[in-house]
Length: 500
Length: 76
Image (cartoon, rainbow over all chains, first blue to last red; front, side):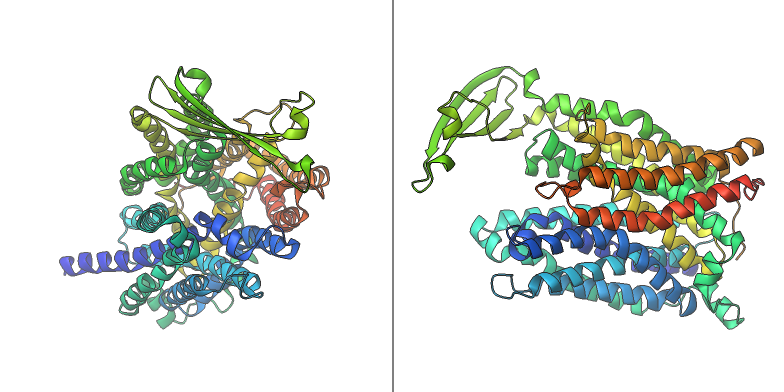
């Protein structure tokens, strides 16, 4: 009997985790392939398509995910967990597949509108998926092991990112640049449908959550989960506490460790993209088991302490870690060994004022790192002794000896993520009663993760363009939000569990 | 501890108002027709301010609940 229960819980975890991982993969590949998506569907020279691109970027994450949380949360608390998070999987998989099939703007002028709709559907589906998966696993888990079992769901976001990087890199390396740009970019989207079909088949065979089934058989399910969740003061105060005392800080730490670090290395430090993604991929693989470690530990010592410690460590360590990564990449700290400079003039016969001089410098340093520096000058300005480049691009490829330093820093950043994220599924599940659990836990999670976390790049840019800021100033936003969340969490969070 | 939690409730209410004021002021300052960054475009600001309105209301409500002692009992 005991073995049967144990086998069953692992089937439940597999069914939930595989589907959630695929949904995260589907959501990430759109972001990871944003440059080529923009080129194919949202040319920036067209104001309408550029507008739609911005809408797709911001609305999908910020508005639609919390709305998806409300919509599917409500459905899950009325109809049941199993069928609701089957529906989210179908919507996500179908949308992703159709993105891969869509003709480009060049051949189909409505394509940008359809891509926008499909992206919004992805956000909607993601908003409904996580709450369902976490609730489903938690409601099968025995008392005292909820943290451990739900932590397997918590690995799926990071693994989804890892799988998306691997698939994209594999496709890019398997095809010529021309083939990839022409049709190869569709493959990561099309692959999704096969993964989704497998996951649907697995989920169809699962039974409904036992706690929900029991509630339904007793006639105790909620007829209006939205009202019961947010119109009831006793529950609403817990939703607010979950958001401001836990998921808000979790969201910014999660985003900063996994995405902002990548953007910082590529755009601020100028590190070569494939090298960055490879080292991040290694770090993600090494750190992923710690989601389960901290989930397990939270069953022993409590969830609040681990999550808040992760937030505090993030606040303390972000600036030194990012500073060190920047200094490793900073060529001012390196000694030049050899350099090759090629200067090219690009004369515009029709408009001499638009003629350019491009200076390409290939510099090798004594530590074997390489810098490719491209400076573009206006010919007109050069003729009046103005030597300021109109555009500068630098790409640094670090020597392999730096691999473990950068990987270690990313590892530490994502370790903070595992601390705040590993226990949080069990934490959120335990805050709310069964009959409104899906609704109540989904909203604070997606506001914390999707809104507060998703705003990291926007607010970071806002801060870094302000007077007096430097390359680390963007970190004030995640540090500030995590610090406020830490204070609220320390003072107001309790370990009270909702009765089943 | 309950007194600290209670009076911090006022801080959260003020913070809620401050967040909206900050966002609106930042939007006015950064929206530029010829800007190239996302922070220069009006659409992201519209979306962010729309989504943050209910969040700010939520923070103010959280502060109000804290001030009224709704979070006073911590049960382990």
